Image (tube, rainbow, N blue to C red; front, top):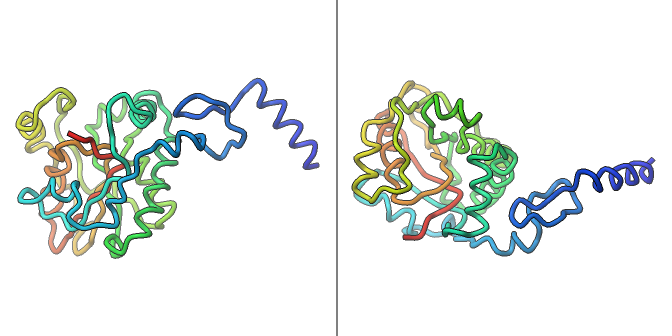
Length: 233
């Protein structure tokens, strides 16, 4: 039976090849999304292991963040940018699950995130989420949760107004664009918890800062941050 299944799988692979989402090369196993060459090209930060890392410094004096990390460095025209574009704009939800698991495995190696109680994905404005079909931060949280077994609290906070894209804005404009855009819906849901706020890419941290400060309105709550990537200035 195994031989028959292998033959069927091989035949199907001819017409429906499984391709690397990074470079497009053919992959043998269906369980992977990246080839070894692309995996080796991903620039890991190891920030989860170190206090006062560059991501944590972003929030100094702005939000009371307990710990912060990002899995990879983000640069323009990189494999990671190509992969994230597919996640955010091409409906490749499986990419978020895959990288969320990698984030979860890394966070489990660090005692700085050992007392997290729940995951909170950075919310999208409702109409944008409907157009996209999902919130990429929520998908990353699903991957993290599959490893850490932590619950996802995706209903405690919402983005109450739409914002213009942050991509072309400078640091001050990003702050002005995101100010007052989040509302804490259920303080009791997170009261007394240490929550991990999840996002895909951190640049200036303006959006995460605004969301974190709203979450911190709940009693005895602690907020840490984890992102898939950190954009170098």
